[in-house]
Image 1 (tube, rainbow, N blue to C red):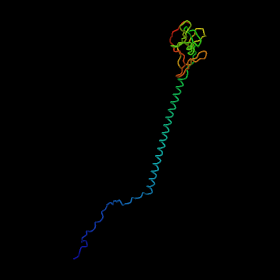
Image 2 (cartoon, rainbow, N blue to C red):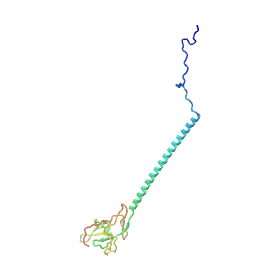
Image 3 (cartoon, helix red, strand yellow):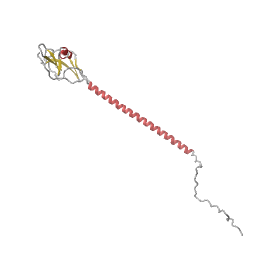
Image 4 (cartoon, rainbow, N blue to C red):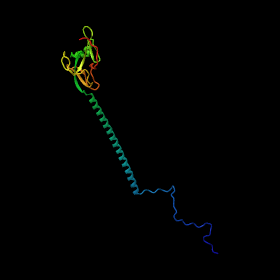
Length: 200
């Protein structure tokens, strides 16, 4: 009796199946990148660095432009402010003042001068200067602005209303009554109004 060669304790091995996959385990070494892949990666890194540098340069230029624009704006603003100040501060004109008594007759400029009046026990009030006269009472004096004439004559023209604070006011003798300009004025006691007066 002939014995079958396939008989025995172990079954025959199965043939491998088609389309099967093999998986890498943790001991599998990764494949090294090719030369082309390495070159492409280096080019990509170099391009990224160039892009970052261009972005930094663009930011720096923008910051510089902003500073220049801000500086220009401040400069223009300061120039405008200074120009406005000097425009306001510049005197607008010159007027000659003459000292007159209560009747409008031109008198010595000293009678409208604060130091002279106070040294003669006089005083000022409401744009008038008051100087004591013999026999009691006071004689009043005030400035006429722009009027003409000589001492002892009745003033011709002009006005008793004081000019703008930006106007230079001087007497015929050259005494400064008011220095025109922004926030600058002299003591002239020439604000208009009425005061008490005595006899001539």
